[in-house]
Amino acid sequence: MDFSTALPTFVITLREGVEAALVVGIVLALLKKAKQSRLNPWVYAGVGVGIALSALIGVLFSWVIQVLGTINPQYTSVVEPLMEAVFSVLAIIMLSWMLIWMTKQARFMKAQVEGAVTEALKDNTNAGWGVFSLILIAVVREGFETVLFIAANFQQGLIPALGAIGGIALAAAIGVLLFKWGVKINIRQFFQIMGVLLVLIVGGLVISALHNFDEAAANYALSNRASESLCFYYERFTKIHSCILGPMVWNTANILPEEKFPGILLKALFGYREHLYVVQAVGYVVFLLTVGGLYFRSIMGGSAQDSKNISAGQKSVSPAKE
Image (cartoon, rainbow, N blue to C red; front, side):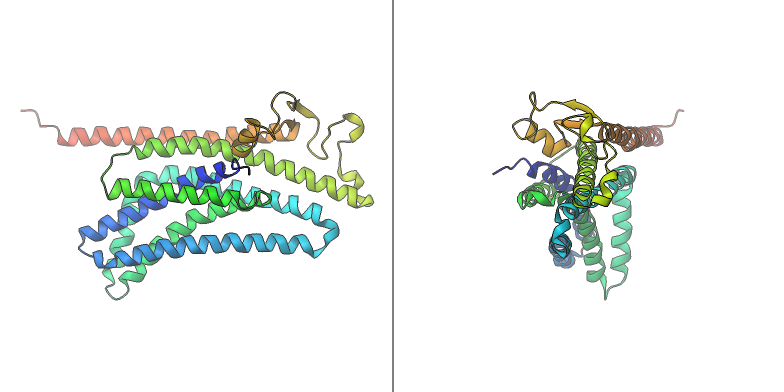
């Protein structure tokens, strides 16, 4: 059994899970400070329902894929890679947006959660539901992004789900270490490292999405004579050809095959392909320059802002000169 496909979902779920665990930990700490620990069950209920709802969304996605694949058996070989490509694009958009937006908003997270909890506690009759909703939204938001990524790789079966379970378990353990046992962890550094991994993983998803679009186009061209012209790159140009991805950039099948270790690991994590084509190479570079560039700028901007805040804080507490 190939467990390498569980690694990407493990990394993504771990990052998303730690983010959700921070929200949960902050809420529990605020409730304890406000002497409202009676509302803790609402927090745990929000976590449980959020995870269950995320899993349900995943099951519904799988069902939709199966239904679409069986509507017209003649085009199953077209629908499956096409659906995988579409889910890949959605996952790329969601994960890229989350990565950049959350990096910019991370330093305001505590203040935002405090404000939301304060508002919820003002309404004594519905305080529990307010806290529950806050946690539910936080968990489902992170869970939905993971579900999208798993759906984008639905042909890999249940193995990615095992990676997701492992990521959730480790994220929960980190939350306990932080808020229950008071263990000091450099959260900023953790998110930065996970962010770099996520950029590379999503970059690999770009390559996979283009491969699936190419496969769908090639299968459609083969099943329908009227669509033969859809493939603008023909077999007569090269023995190993693409349909819509142009000429081959490299062929590393003999050096680093994608179905053997370590190629299979690189393929699962970073979208490595033994046959890479021009459109894939361009798409990957464009993604790294745009999304990767925005991410690193947000990191540097956040670090600079934090340095200014620290300097301002030091000045404010320094003794005045006589």
